[in-house]
Amino acid sequence: METKFLIDPGGLRDVADALTDRYDPTVGEDALHRLSDFLTVRVPGRRDDRGKTVPELVGEGRYRDAVQRLWPRLVAYTFDEPAPAEGFGDADRPRGPFEPPSRTRVVPRYFSDRRELLGILRDLVDTMFGGAAADAGKPTWCEKTPFNLLCMDFLWELVPEATIVHIKRHPVSVLASHLAQPWAPSTVDGALAYLKPVYHRWLAWKAAADLTGRRYIEVKAEDLAADWPGQRRALFERLGVDDFATSSTFQWHRLAGRNNQFDDETRDLIEEALGEVIPAMGYE
Image (cartoon, rainbow, N blue to C red; front, top):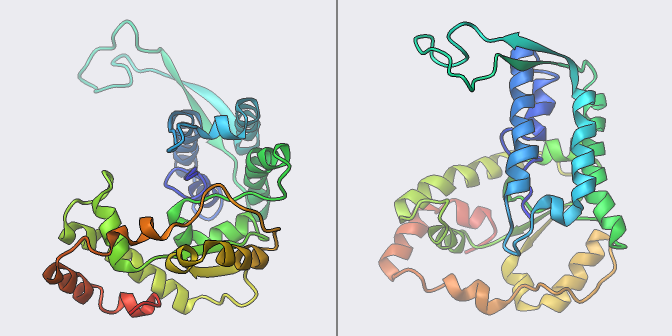
């Protein structure tokens, strides 16, 4: 599922920067506070389309223990900050009877060697995902947060042997799909405003990046849907894993369902707006 905590704001990528290159006690404490909220509130409380949470998928005991072991490795010191007379709220508001008399503050560790911190964060990932894969008798695991694509440098820092699989789709169909999502703009103009910067950032990064020797695979969703068994075998071979008949498949009728979503005038407008993006992504 999209676990998000590897690269989303408040996740491991932010902590990696906050405790190294961007370190100061305030920045580090803020990053740890947000990571704590991410791992103890947001991740356990979010269910995927199967109704499962990350702790349920990797094992609730394993997840809890991995998170608890993380904090002593990232925190140098803790102390209680006494509440002023007016409490921790607005200065002109008296403290109520249920407000705490103090709050816990954290002094984050500073890592002069970024690799040491990445090793600690890698242990968290290996324990959760690697442990779940081992329990299932699998040699590897896959995580599918979409914006992983824009954070490939960090992901290869975290897991150097990782293969990043970029499954792309025609940009017009991507826009059509976004219109149906509650978390995305519901108009064509809004979806264009949302997507165009993402495409431009990706294309600029790819043009400047050296992917030589990197474990990176790019494939069209349309090709996978046109011949899933054959394309699956080829993809799995490139990944270095044994082929098997997956329960989930790429299905052409589901992928093509967006092809006729727009009338000719609207499609022309979208294609014009994405004029440079469409061929750069390998489409006509």
